Amino acid sequence: GIQVEQSPPDLILQEGANSTLRCNFSDSVNNLQWFHQNPWGQLINLFYIPSGTKQNGRLSATTVATERYSLLYISSSQTTGSGVYFCAVEAQYNFNKFYFGSGTKLNVKP
Amino acid sequence: DTGVSQNPRHKITKRGQNVTFRCDPISEHNRLYWYRQTLGQGPEFLTYFQNEAQLEKSRLLSDRFSAERPKGSFSTLEIQRTEQGDSAMYLCASSLELRGNGYTFGSGTRLTVV
Image (cartoon, rainbow over the protein chains, first blue to last red):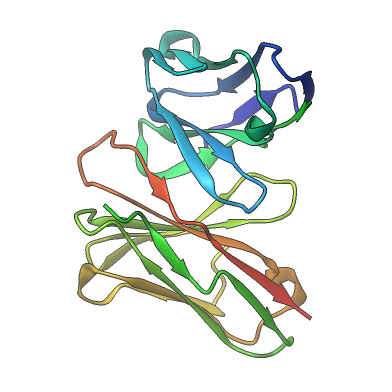
């Protein structure tokens, strides 16, 4: 199956700081989503972004499909943004399942 | 759109008992997925339904696991003769058939086998 690598694995930010999370994948993808998993386990969809750039409030994401990576930008981080951020991809040759990375665990301190 | 609903939220069971989880997808979504997530890891694919047909099963889904989606609506995941290694978060997701559509996940069922 497709390999998904996320970096960094852990990140500590002071409230108000900016950061970039990276997701590399090993093959062509049909779908890429960024999720935020809150402390209760809920996976919240942040972006559906198989290519291009999207923005939603203090978050934005860019996927460069030809170079097989995606970036999630967090600006002016808030404590409510703590949790684990996952990148998940759906391979172009098998669009029936998502492959998840191991996530970036973010802790935003007040 | 009420989202994807999963019940129960938490389940504690003794080793050897059977458990069943339920997932109600978004009503217009014809695709339904089950994933399993263990501590510190990303979710892993278990199985996938298109309408009522179970089209793909992971090797993670041993003979003790069975999933159904009668009438293409809600789905159930049953684990027979639970083992401690089955302790995990079980996540359900749904999507539309159109290729490249995004997934919506439920809140999950956290299973603890003691």
